Image 1 (cartoon, helix red, strand yellow):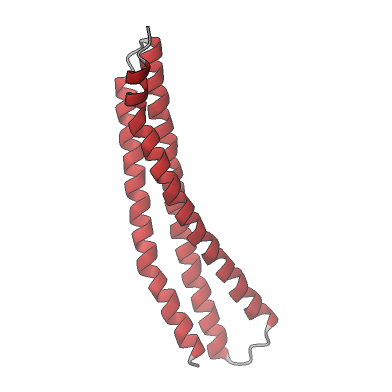
Image 2 (image 1 turned 180 degrees about the vertical axis):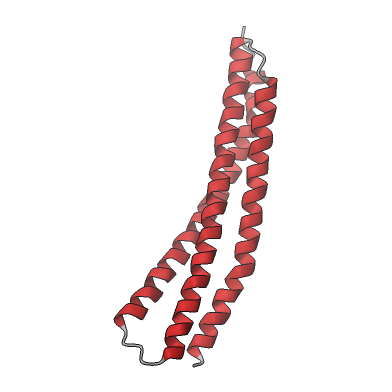
Length: 147
């Protein structure tokens, strides 16, 4: 007979990981959307306005390039977090199959859980680098406004 309590207990760690990573994905996605919207707005201003001042146009271009760099970092963070969810799901499924089917998938459970945690770690590194780079975009914006 299947021990439901054991099944739920063993599958809990990957499921808790999925919930935590989902919250991180939500926050990262919000940051990513804001950066993309800011890039679109700056590009619209650059194209629509008749910028006679070369310094202002250069400042717009520098800020857009800085924001594109931040968007790439956020995209990488999102991908890492989605991989973490993917591997956590594999870990949960292999746990359930192992308990219900009596098949030993311990190696698959552990490997997928390790890859999931490594993906969360990598995504966290991308987020930290984004936070560091976001200050640079603000500094460029402030310099543009002071021209």
